[in-house]
Length: 169
Image (cartoon, rainbow, N blue to C red):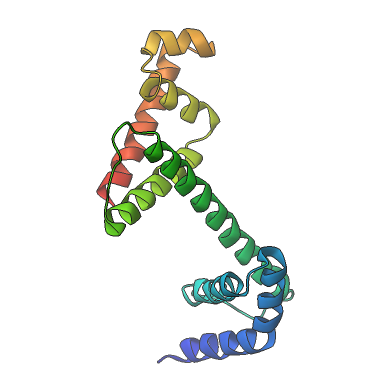
């Protein structure tokens, strides 16, 4: 192990020992659930393990809270998406029976699509959704949004490229 790796490990150990209890309490207050708070506190430090440079921080609690907030947002987003999926499944004429593994794969795929849509930017996302969900033509999208046909094409190429990158991953 290199000197930098030893320093990184020592810093993380100090960060954990000095701030884990505080972070756990902060998350418990936000979630009202000790089990979920413990999981998210642990996930926060796991996220730090993947970072190459965790030099001593001026505001370690602020930094940890920022990471934890992001994890909370991800958690709520996942729960909302999963709830919407379950509601859509319940509305099916014929009850669908899927395995827990298939359910997990579907939720992960939906989350990946959600992240992709979020990353596209407002105009690209709007154009993509009009083409895919409402099945509008390029001309109809252009008219509805008041943008040129080349703009619609440019944004759809970007969206489709991002979809291909996601599919290849």
